[in-house]
Picture 1 (spheres, helix red, strand yellow):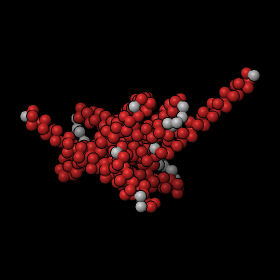
Picture 2 (tube, rainbow, N blue to C red):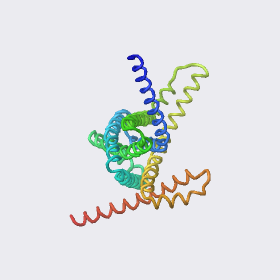
Picture 3 (cartoon, rainbow, N blue to C red):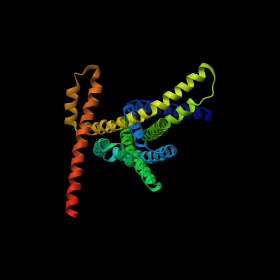
Picture 4 (cartoon, rainbow, N blue to C red):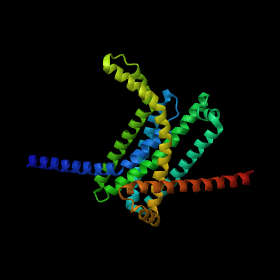
Length: 306
């Protein structure tokens, strides 16, 4: 009798793990587009560090990301149970913040370009240890803030997938997704920011013959490609802010979402791409308008205190 009960318990555990595994796979698939945006944005956020500080910065943001999810998972569960409508409004507010950050990032890029390489170097490369430490902390805080908003979307998407499941299954799936996504994103970010070091190591390989030449050639290609990749990621991360933020805003306003769906309905196989483009435009417009409002408040406050 005890033996049959034990095997029945094992069957229940196996069934539970199967359910959680299935829900995790579905949630990961639905979160894939957000994950790619998360990767691009965070890779861009942690660039610009000295080579010996890149991995410590990634590690600091990784720990911050885990703290974000430790806050988001219980909050999402509570809000979903007590006040579901609040989740949508909070995501829209986060999306607006992302769009504003994206607009400011683009303005900053063009501003540095106009002031020339000398001004850019002064701004991007602090000289004193104090300036370097302050710059590093700003980058870390900015990356953690951005991660909070992107993580919120991943958690909400997962919550929607497991909405009909038992509470303990929801909790286990959310925790599993949070851990897997965080380790995956920041593992890749760490690899990207140290790509040039990997290239240098391969280029100095002492291997002989055809294999050795191929390894050294690969190293040279990685070293040459690393600066272009980092520059591309800087722009991809900025565009991703508009895409994610615009998606939050558009999906939170039902009439706007219906209009967009009507526009892209006849795009055929390009419907998903067209929808993302429109979401990006919504994000860019929202970011520009938010920047104008923030700038207006700053001007009024300066006049009042001046």
